[in-house]
Image (cartoon, rainbow, N blue to C red; front, top):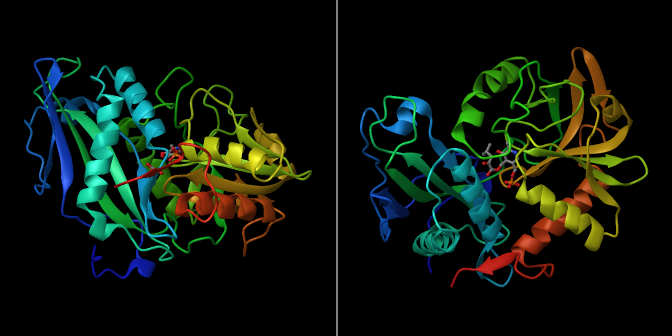
Length: 341
Ligand code: PLP
Ligand code: COI
């Protein structure tokens, strides 16, 4: 398979149109058989449920080239399951999980020329999503939906790659206690746009959102979960019903325990405790693990001992082990790495 002529090493996290995408439509209570198409345009009613009431959910995952030249995706079964849960919460029909996995394989296979070569630093980002497509004017779920997956080659989510980030404690809330923070719905991102633009305008890379009810516990950022390392070398991640259950974070906890022999736990983390942490990172499919060097809480600076030039040592070990598993240089736990044949 001849690869496209792309400057892989200098890709940012942006959209590049690839050759093929997958589309399936839901109508009269059933999904059609689905097709791979070259048509990147979506044509829907001006009154489509997604346009009026934001009835849309999505996923994010990546395809990689391994050291021995195989094309693989990381734990796609968990994306399929999470998308089913997201859809159910927004009263959308579930796209069957086995069909989700098959569609992922079809899209990656069709766009194999866009899967970046091993060692290039880039990956093929996959974006499964679905939305209400028929006219809806009273507030209710749509009757018709479209499920799609497109692929786009990407580099690092944060400019500067692994340079530690500076984030701020946000005054805006991301998710309500019994709201939709735990699902991957477009609405959670729409409401974060003002907060991120404001953070960027003030010189910060991201927002640290706190729990909306008490504003005392750490939740997550707009697009990634937090991971901290305590001064005695324990990996801790925030536990909350209103954050997205990150597949990267769940994998890292297992990597910490089983590959690195570290203690790792998910628990509530008071903002007050952050000043005592040794390392901090943002973890997610797009972010992988992006180190945080400084957290600013209304003028009060928390400078992580790992500093502003490099990843903390444990964060680095986690990063190297996870990416090693994904790229096939380290043996993966059963079922984590799925080959596209
Ligand atoms: N939190 C939010 C709000 C996200 O958008 C993402 C990205 O998917 C994550 C966390 C990380 O989740 P995952 O590791 O499954 O990509
Ligand atoms: C991902 O990590 O896949 C996401 O969806 C996060 C998004 C902010 C790019």
